[in-house]
Amino acid sequence: MARKTNAERQAEYKRRHLEEGYAERLDMVLSVNDGVALRRLCAHSGETKKALIRRLINEEQARLMVKMTPEDLQKFVSLADIKWKNITG
Image (tube, rainbow, N blue to C red; front, side):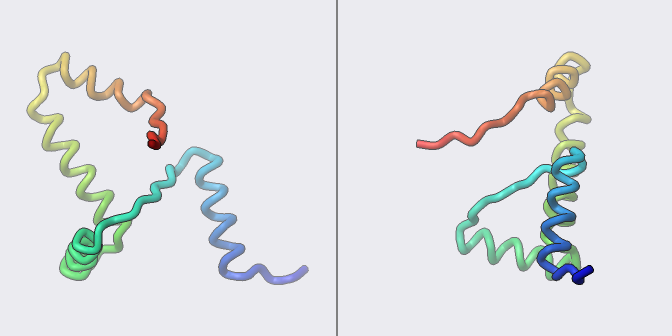
């Protein structure tokens, strides 16, 4: 049996996590300024881009949720059921 290349192992890992529902792919293009800011924040915090983005998302969500009424919180939580689509044009 031939050894798998690093790229093959990474592709298998990504495919498995996406298929099993453990992950959601995020592809985006940032402005140069935003890319520099992201690298600075990562260097300063010692986090990977993935870890930094995850932390910022969770902090912002918690900040918003703590201020919500029970009704608003219920609406907010139900937004997770929305299937987002790419909008082109």
